[in-house]
Image (tube, rainbow, N blue to C red; front, side):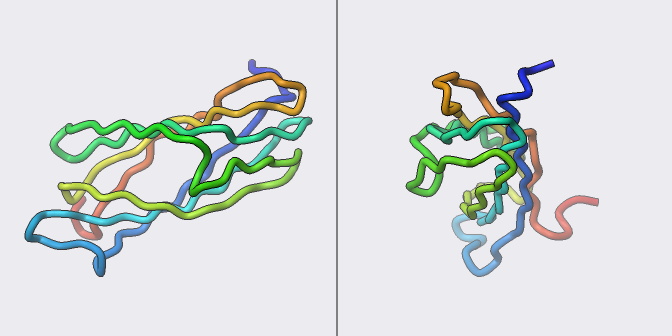
Length: 126
């Protein structure tokens, strides 16, 4: 069991963006809404992110960078930080997963897991 001082939960919802998608060339745009909840007992700063994006053909793209949407938020215990971002796929279906690299106010570094989630054009899956 991980240390209760460093508990972060990540929830994600997705949506397809037909107005930003196109068939020629094939590109499918998706937005994802992220809520990061600090369930630990001390404040934590989100330092960086690591995404693994896999399209329907199995092509993998990794994205690493500082913060999220230009911010490195400090999330107090019991509080949430929410943001929206997006990605493009060359296929109608794909998935994302990854982690946030966090630092608690006591200096302890830890990772917050982002469990795999699906990106799919409506009707693309049976």
